[in-house]
Amino acid sequence: MKLKEILNGLSILSSRIQAEQEISFLTFDSRKATEGSVFFAINGVNTDGHQYISKAIENGCRVIILEKDDEKLPEDVDYVKVTNSMIALGEAASNFYGNPSRQLKLMGVTGTNGKTTTATLSYELFRKLGYKCGLLSTVVNKIDEREIPATHTTPDPIELNQLLAQMVEEGCEYCFMECSSHAIHQHRIAGLDFDVAAFTNITHDHLDYHKTFQNYLMAKKMFFDDLKPEAKAITNADDKNGLVMLQNTKAQKFSYALKSVADFKIKVLENEFSGLHLIIDGQEIWTQLIGDFNAYNLGLVYSIGVLFEQDKMEVLKALSSLKSVAGRFQFVVSPKRKITAIVDYAHTPDALENVLKTILNIRTKGERVFTVVGCGGDRDKTKRPEMAQIACQYSDQILLTSDNPRSEVPEEIIREMEVGVPAEAKARVLSIVDRFQAIKTACSMVNDKDIVLIAGKGHETYQEIKGVKHDFDDMKIVKELMNDLNL
Image 1 (spheres, helix red, strand yellow):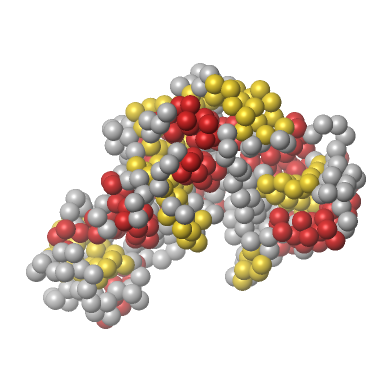
Image 2 (cartoon, rainbow, N blue to C red):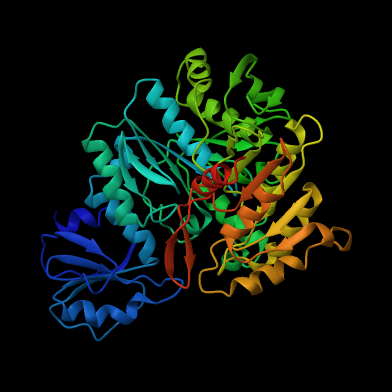
């Protein structure tokens, strides 16, 4: 592709382009910047790509996109100066791959909790309605039926547009994607053309990155501020910050809610381990998902179907057959003693509270609740005591353990969680660093029909310790323990 075509629509402050060039690929990694490439010097969170411009030039790259003036560039090197190199990368990547987001009906969902469930169930819904679809999520990326491992909740702009272009090439009509606050703030979704934007909720999370809750809130809001007038924006009217998302958006505005006045109204009639009995938009529906938090998710997925102009009754019919997303309130019941083990990705205070409240609401009599929970290393430390406090508030027995300690010492993470344990609950709390032993201990302590919640890792099949990922699957382990302990 010609350089001129790649630069189309970019906000250029100044440039030196000596001749029209054929470009074979884009990169922000100087090690990959060779002849025929464009190197984007990104001023990132951990490093400044401008430091590596000379390396890119040494490797043969002759086109540099930058934010800062650099008079040392050789005469035979072209440059384009822009206000923000990451935004330019997103727009250039869209151009380079043929603007695939304009050829798809693209939905993006943001929020603290519920992103993966909303994106995945929307993908499943539209496949049941007969469409070829793409999915970009924390758990997995999909191009119709083909799975591609996910490394980030939202990929970088080059990988993102590559995936979208493959979806277009393979005949997909829709794509459903998660948009994390990091990705929005870092402009990883710049240049994409969203048709529907959805907001789930916002609670305490990622303050290690955003520093303040206000910054976190504004990062989410940026997504809606940048929408085109033709787009549709839908928010959770029950969330106290839900309507903030719509304040400055040019898009058409919609809302959904269980409690508030909204365009799409949801009501829970029954909530049991067998599923949810709901009224959505005036129609009764039985679904296989569980809990009020999933009532919100299902209401949003229904709304997305309607906003994409699908038949309401067909959407409801398909919705009733959807199953839980991997690692989101997945449960298994032991064959002999009827112990229920629930595996859930809940890794924020709000998510943990929602799951535990759901368990308490649907247990029938005197079943005790055992909660196995940890907190991830190298992440927001301020939520650690709050996670422990919530586990104590809604559980009969609490086992504090490792999640993904990453580079941190797991014993120290647990000590920081223990700060949140109320004095009256200390006798009900065990701290067991080894996650396997914590799960095994919980399973060894239960009585018939008790409930064990294993929270924090959900769909993950590994545990990250000192930079090494070890095989660890909560659901697989608890099933094996049920068998070994003759539960």
